[in-house]
Image 1: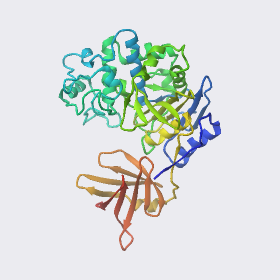
Image 2: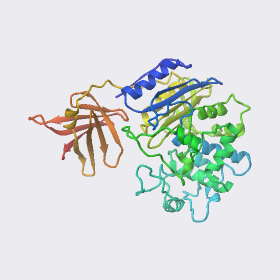
Image 3: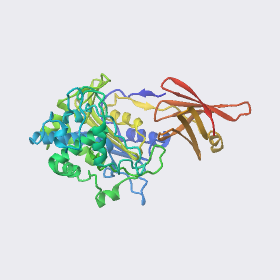
Image 4: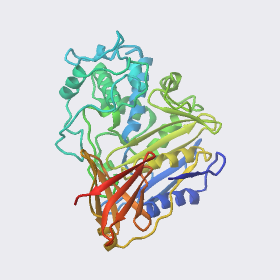
Length: 446
């Protein structure tokens, strides 16, 4: 559904070009309310903002605006691990069970135990998320997830793969790693991050618990249809995605982790993050400790993204050009922002080009509203609001649809299209849904 465009070579882009990229994503693609993005090359890090913070009173976006950075937290957790290794407090091949109480029984498989290294390289065999079927607040789903629930899940879980042998992205794994390291240090996870990473690197606006100043500077988060949404809290799984930060602090972090900054604090621990790499199913993508590593376009890019219900973020750098990038968004519209971050690191990585859209009046859109059954267990709910159209699958998040012809719409979050079919009287009666190469006919029931 989308094609790539490339500007051909690595280099610092003019700020006007970066602003145009952000403007297209906000004003044309409607994927965000506000963004902060920029490149870093040595001590130079020009920053570009576009859109709104959507706060009251409205505070302009800048390098000190606070965002949730979601899974970029995992790199901080991995760095805590390697810092503790350099201090002799833990070893990479220690079983995680060594740092948990007896009620925290960790599953193994074929005689293999899950090690700290397995957790840090996404190869523990643990699933992406633990079961938490009934959070008190669906907009803040992990706020009430307890340590007791974590231990109960682990005690009853059977691994599908031997630890250390199979890549599977796991928020649960990094949440467990952060929990175990905090227990080993006899400190909270946040105390460890502040004392061992933020203080040495001078990152004064990187926290889980917002200071009064950070609260004043925090942009409002928005969901996938750009409606304001709650911030996320995850006290038990903090190591997987609980940190809030700013572009300026993340630039300081990138400067420290750059391979050329040999005198940076935590240098031995930073180097250890990339020393071990494990494969994924993509031959051009491997995982290190916390980081992902892409080898394309005659480059090696080390990167990590993060997403919560209301925010999306990217940090990354090239080990060959030493150029890096930060991109922060105040909307939880996830996948389409990876390309911006990679493009800012190296312009040979293409930007996604979205298909053109047409404007449809509110009355026409209202005629599509209804429920369309794909199977006995799954239906698509179409909702019109003013001059926008949205789709929600059973048990899924809602996303916006965009028109490219009469009765024909597409998604920007994933490669999917919808075609509405009318009867002889012109009434919408059916929906064809096209995704992953399959066409599914969905009968309208409401």
